[in-house]
Length: 288
Image 1: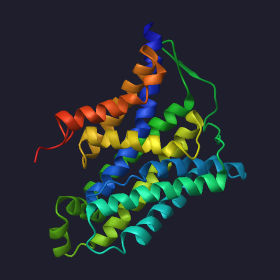
Image 2: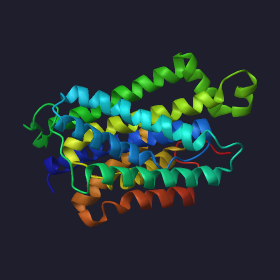
Image 3: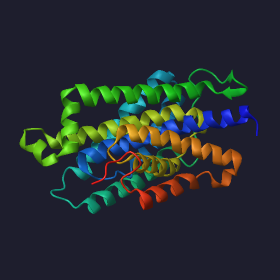
Image 4: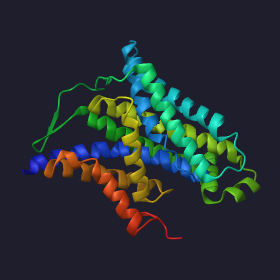
C-alpha cells in the first residue's frame, strides 16, 4: 500500500477518533461527578446529529442548527438527570448504571419515533471539495471535526482549572464527601456534569454527521467505542480519553484498510478487553 493511501487512512482515523474522544470526555465528566458510567452518552451524540439535520431541514442556517441542537440535547441530558438520577436517595451504583441503560433505550426509541428509521443527511459546513495533501484527499468537514474537538478540549481544560464551578467539579471528582462538607452543592455539580456531557456529545454528533450520516441506531456503537476510549485512557482522566480516542480511531481505520473492513468495529472491543485484562486502570490511569 502506498504512503498516500496510509496517510488517507490516518486522516480518516484521526477524524473518527476525535468523535470517540469527545464521547469519552462525556463519560469522564459524569464518572468524576457521580462515579457511574452513563451508557446513554452515545445516544447524546446520535441526538445531536439527528436534531441538527432536522433543524437544517426546516430551513435554519447550519450555525443555528449547530447551536440549537447542542442546547436541546444539553436540556435532554439535564432533564434525564433531574427526573431519573436526582430523585434517588443513596442508590447503588448498579442501579444507576441500569437507569442509564434504560435511558439509552428510551432515547433510541424516541429518535426512531420522531425521525423514523431512515438515515439523515446534513450538508458539510464548508462544501464538499476535497483538500489535497501529500497525495491524500482531506474532506473539508474533517477540519471542522478536528477543530471542534480541539476547541472543546481546550475550553473544558480552562473551565475545570480556572473557574469556581470547574474547581468544584474537580473537588467532587476527588472526594464527594469532603466537597459536600466544604459547602459545594454536589447535586448541582452532578446536574452540570450531565448537561455538559450531553452538550459535548451533541457537538460531536453534529460535526460528524456530514461525513458518516446519522440514524437512530448509531449512538449505541459510538457510545461503546467512546467507553472503550475512556477505559483505555483511564476513567476520570480527560487527557487520557483524548489520546485514547485518537489511538482507537487510527487503529480502526488502519485495520479496515490493511486487513478488512469487516473487523473494523472489533478493534475497540479487543482494545477494551486487553486493557481490562492487563491494566484495568487504563494506560494513563493511576493504580489504586
